[in-house]
Length: 280
Image (cartoon, rainbow, N blue to C red; front, top):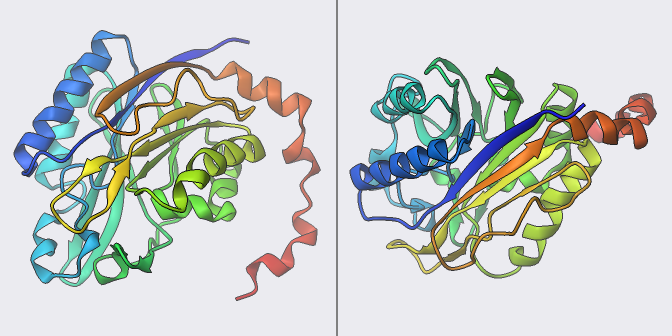
């Protein structure tokens, strides 16, 4: 049975400060709402530059509490204003010395539903994330929102199939994957991994990437954000690899049951045969 959700995502260039970055995303959200969207997601640490290109203590200043910090509270107001579910990725400060790469999920009435903390933390040139973030420790939650069951995976998490599967087992219908990914080896994987995850787990994926050059390091973020359906097919065009863009697409959640009846991956799984997967 058809059940269409109009969904949005934003790939944005860094403005130079948090206030203008938040304001820009608010305008994108309002435009998405004018187009009838019921859910929107932003890119990784959307209200800051991608500071992980360097390892400097000054960048802890971007962190704030979740949900009580100013950004999430402002996004709660925006959700109430627009009537949209909002996925809000920020640098979370839990307490002194405890920092996470986090996404808050806010329902269409402004209710804070909870958060996801990035599990897999890279530490390679240009992506010095272990300097800033502890690994996620609150599982793979799926949030029951006004548009359906929404999960989150963040950037480097996408290279690890176990998280995608756990989100599917937890009931996800749409998974938002906010990212900060630069040109190079990952460009080929960008249009391979999320469609493969959507097929293997039979849900929709919103793949969001930053776009443009920023003030820290020399990474060139290539955008190319998209929605992909449970058959692994792009929903509409992939976004620009150079320009900021708001992407709004219709997702027929009825396709999930249709695909799961045709390709019964959940029925045919063999968890009894996978004990080796949890070996260190």
